[in-house]
Image 1 (cartoon, rainbow, N blue to C red):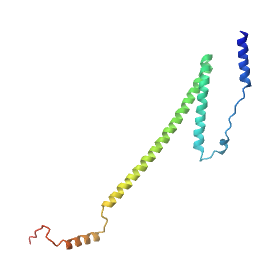
Image 2: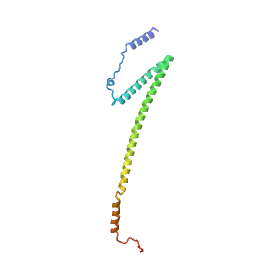
Image 3: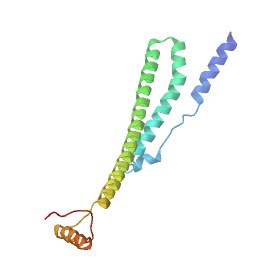
Image 4: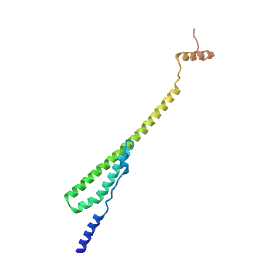
Length: 152
């Protein structure tokens, strides 16, 4: 029995002596409007990754301990992580929707321009005088019998 107690005591001492890792981002100081979106995406993804790692470790411990407060804390952590993942998913869907809408609008504009160019090519653009002169010139050149009988 003392061997088990010694091992537990040694585990506690090892946990106390473990160095605490601090994460410092040097990119936090140079946040501006140009890189704000990327900062938000990076921070949110890091937060989600960290919370998923916490869930993996803490949920098993909370359930094993049977402590209602620990179980409630694990449930709150899971809920907040799932809402963060859902928010990132909505952001991804919105970006894809915007990208698709831009491509569709671009294709629509290109097709309208092409249709407009084709319409302009088939239309005869002349003034009234030019049309009248064109008809009169054709009438002068068509002096031959074109199958019309004049009954005067």
